[in-house]
Length: 328
Image (cartoon, rainbow, N blue to C red):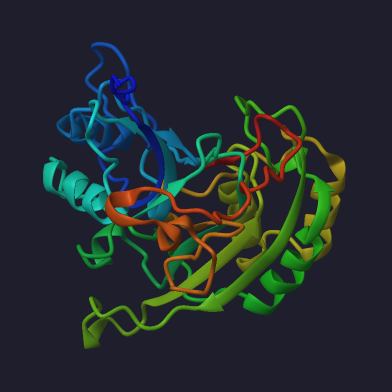
């Protein structure tokens, strides 16, 4: 009896977590064409060329960040199709290979998972968290440590009314139309979002601050939602800082929110990009980078990355807005 037809190339989809310092990049998204600007995605896809996939590898980014914005952990999915007879890469091998071939020291792949073929890194995300770093007591830019430059927003003021900022942040919690905090150019079809967490807290003392620079203090603002509007976090941050400086009151923040007017007097405030970090992107059924228990596919694979029976059901797409996502 003749043997059956030879198995064709096998396409495997992966979810990868990666981090980067956004200084010097034109955002995370790839810049196509002959432009001199470059995005983080350009370097990731250049490294993926060394995987020798039958079909060129494209990264589908979960959360698009602007020029200068950093990421402690962003995410993307990609497909790798190896030649006939070659098994899929294991997630560990894929992670190591991408890091080996990355040509920019400010980008690092953290972890990879095998996922179902219709998994989508942007639409399947159930939570995104951004943090924003502030420094007070810095009258001049040259008074900030060189190790902290482009990592925080340096404010001249020595004092922030944190209690007032926290009170103002409470008005932003919950489901609202956040049109007043949306910048022009947002691709979202709806400006309604649910803000699950908004906090203002002191940051531990920076290890890069010398004893004689004790007037410098650091603060962190954190925001969590399933998705955000374009520059929503930076505009909320700017408004909360205005409250901390006494320019606005907590009640005025509620008025701004309810105005739904993105072009109002105070709504044009936007915090600088370099103080913003994408902290995490979470998915139902996948463990996060802190190692919380899950039924991640990476843990249900057989030798050489082949899927074994009993895989979890596909991760549900939680959003009804086809253009929802992280846009900062």
